[in-house]
Image 1 (cartoon, rainbow, N blue to C red):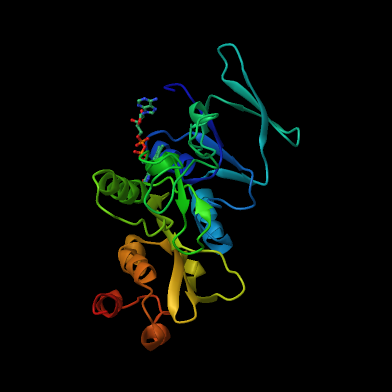
Image 2: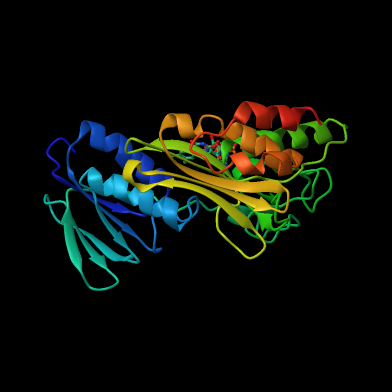
Length: 280
Ligand SMILES: Cc1cc2nc3c(=O)[nH]c(=O)nc-3n(C[C@H](O)[C@H](O)[C@H](O)COP(=O)(O)OP(=O)(O)OC[C@H]3O[C@@H](n4cnc5c(N)ncnc54)[C@H](O)[C@@H]3O)c2cc1C
């Protein structure tokens, strides 16, 4: 590491990019990132948000390759690594960062009575298919708050909420898990980046967008009728610091009809929206 000059990064998701964002401050190496999807952070940002972040990465001198995947890595004796992409293109690197996603390690339960799908299947009490056996956190599959689809949401807030519900029910109380809400806030390459709930356009949802390409500031709120169901933001700290209000509005299904006209400007009066949300 001390003598490293080049770093090859596999995956442009949250963990890889956080690692590179931290590394680059201390180690001015030549960084090359390869991502299998056609944008960076495909699980957390929409296409425009991904482009804004990619621009921030390129401005830091990082090479970004989209739509590529690694087919082989070989260790060269005393001389770093050789990396081959599916396309046949080859690279040399002194170090490799790999972050290609998480998957619950639940194979030890195969063949048991505990039902498995993408993780340990739980009901809305966090109870598994075996009575009095509960699961919570990164291993547990529950339902998404918005789509009702079965999901494993491997983030802290979800683990904490599920743990609370599981613990209360184990102790004989009757708590219901309301569903997981995707929720990520971070700082990468000097850009604040955040998304909550739904962030991709789809028929039936109305996007309200503020975009200042010159300053690389982008915010999209997605509305389903009169309520917000998601947001994606790239910008500076002040553009994401109040996104917790949006999360609360999604959870509480706040009617924003009265405030819709002020959602497209650079600054949103989140105090007003918070009031609207808590007064219900
Ligand atoms: C690098 C990284 C960065 C992250 N950053 C964020 C972030 O910024 N924000 C966010 O919301 N989430 C983040 N996450 C996700 C977050 O850490 C997890 O969602 C959360 O820790 C899940 O809690 P948990 O209790 O389910 O699992 P864990 O926190 O993983 O705890 C499980 C524990 O069980 C232990 N264990 C495993 N198997 C066994 C066994 N057989 N016997 C005994 N012990 C065992 C493990 O060692 C571990 O200590 C990050 C994850 C990673 C990997």
